[in-house]
Length: 565
Ligand SMILES: [Zn+2]
Image (cartoon, rainbow, N blue to C red; front, side):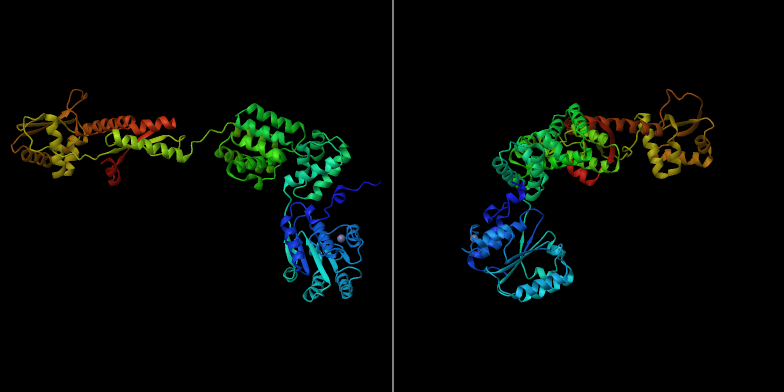
């Protein structure tokens, strides 16, 4: 007995046998039952999903001696002839090898005659998109005025190549890829029937190799059975199919989630020792992380994923050990690595670095959570702490925290009416401010002078000997102006003298300039201390484990004032 390939031996003979195309079967069966069968059908979809099988089943259902019926009997001569491929009224034409207008003319001649034995003349044209334009035109004439005894069933993997004039005259059915669990299920039935021992993992690998095509999956199973015999070992299947062992993908993600750098490097070493292509492994890993992400977010992941039952459970169990953010960041690392691999010879190194990076990802606190924490912190502070003197803007944990201290601008104004009894220092600053307002150029010079004496009777101003400022002041006009201003300031007539100073200034009263810079430094120090001690800043430092990089005094704007109020 000759060996019949599985795809032929297990070809579906009824609509009920056709796996994964229930939507098509139901519509066709309803049409037959209601007697509203179109005269032309177009079956579209990927290779090996059951288009030609469905066409033959439909032909049988229409020609069956007990029909037309929703299912063929598969026992009458009409059914048996169609199954055997020798019915005189069902014509199977391969569009790829009968592309010419001559072939279609012959077909049109044939159509004129009534069926020999059956109800209809049925033409099944496979790969119909391969027909030439003139052949399509010839076909179109028949489709426009079809004789009642003729049915057309066209099948194609590329419906976009079929002219719109043809498409519009057909009832179209789109065949889907067959879900992996359904293929695996049928493979299980077949190997049990054939008395072959194969694990679920191997059957799933075989089904996955078929990529949604039943025919391809079955021919892969043929190949495996031919190679392995009656007992199929997992290792052999993995080697024969050149596929990545799914367990290695699970181990890789497990190593990443456990932050186990050594284990992740070991996996790359194993990938290498098995002779897998590094980039293919990376692509499989990308697919695996997609599975993890979808399982994490979807309420019904089975519909979106091409995973067998057991595989889905494995993925689900792993997904709970990682956060969505972690999975997404891992996925971007893998996608980047895969792109780099395409351009570089160092594929193993790139994969190793990608896995290490994934192992050492720093957990990120979600922004929502940070905002939530800050809000509750602000609420707490609002209850217990007086108006803050500084604000800490939210910044990412890695960036130095910049605390901005709000400085209230305090204008320096002379303090009321001076008197000879007030300390000379205070009076001098007031006098310089007064001169600054009256005569700016003179005030600017006085800021560099030291008040050696400063009373209503005597004003003695020291400048460094030979300095520019002393020279300026010694000018008769300048001296007269200062004397006049001092008289107005004191409402008296103090004697004004200038003294050249030599060497050390220690012990002498400070100039206004010196006082200003001293005060500014003190003020800055005070602001920094306040900012550091502010509860919002200390809390932010603690939450983010941050360091204060810089404290900047900023002008107080109206918004800030509202906040502090
Ligand atoms: Zn029959």
